[in-house]
Length: 300
Image 1: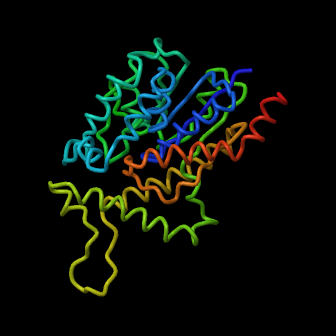
Image 2: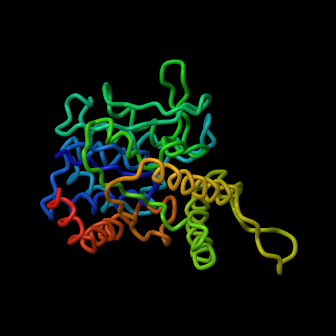
């Protein structure tokens, strides 16, 4: 039996995938193929290249100011940040040069900006493919691929169960990082989401360039009036809501054999400096399901 692991999108929440993978391996689960979208592709590619320990060590060392420096904030073409250093570091230290040189089969995907179609990657350069998969609209610039411009794969397929199936997986474990955006939980979660979004606004306001002024949520005029959301806040929350709805639709149409949904409602888009905490959340998510995982895999 071939086991596939589908790693979902979620920006900084994606460090949770490291803990999930470590915990699955500790339980003796042999992962045969991996597919990832956005940050899921970043972590998945490192894992399939045998570089997960190195990625974990680096992620846990990051401070908030280091993350800000790595993002390369500035009004560039097609995005608010270049993230050049992030993907340069990835290509140099955390992944094999090509898919063919990986120790495990891996696949990722991006979205064709103009046709809306999925563009999958299973061959060629890993670094370029992962960068395309991670190109969050408006935050990072689109990536050129032949005649196409590609953006984040999460726009059309946030948790790529189908790619695991295409690679021959008989049993797919999927990790959804956006489970907290659900209508039935909106009343209890709305306050938490608002507080988390403030952390994202605070992150961008620390930049010493135009972002400190352009994306502030501080309203002028009536001091008693509630400040409207910042541009970043509107963009980020809208994308998360859309992504959560696309995820539910895709998972309903192509359900995994096991779905892991860590509780991450208190984690902001850019809080990459919280890696140690998020890795622990991933490990605990698997530990809570250890008996179920053992039962389902042994019974097959």
